[in-house]
Length: 205
Image 1 (tube, rainbow, N blue to C red):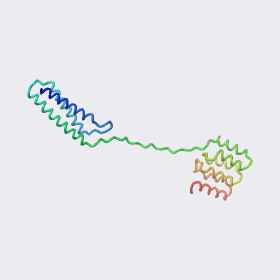
Image 2 (cartoon, helix red, strand yellow; image 1 turned 120 degrees about the horizontal axis):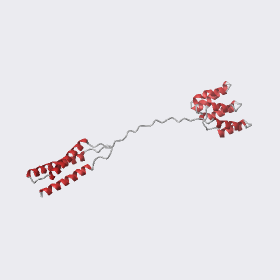
Image 3 (cartoon, helix red, strand yellow; image 1 turned 135 degrees about the horizontal axis):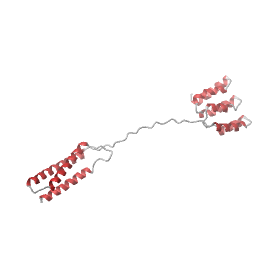
């Protein structure tokens, strides 16, 4: 009868230990070291009790020793269960996110072959208004370099149209640091002053 009782108690102890073990923190969460060590000690005691049961010879001293160790293990298991209930919830480990540097977007001017096609079509026109219409449809709004703008300016004879096309293309210039070269396309100081006004107005100055 005593042997059966011990086996039943051992089974209950194993179930309790298993229940505690199944409530371990999920992956990537730190387990409390102290509780883990205590649980390991209880598991060792249960294994030792099981070994004693297997070697019971009917001696009263052995039975008493098994009962004592079993009672102590059950008490420790009860204390451990209370400590687990009081323990703070585990904190998930959040991986550190390293920001990826964003490269600046580089805008390239249209190919010279495309510009050549637009200029060739514009040169076939007889009047400045017609030339401007071709440029509006084929060039305005597309990225252009300062050197390309100078080629477009050369299509016109009068400064009025020259300043007008600069005003239309200025926002699309891909190398604004070179806009000072546009002054080379204007001879008179009054036209250069008007060009400066256009460039400053478009740049927000």
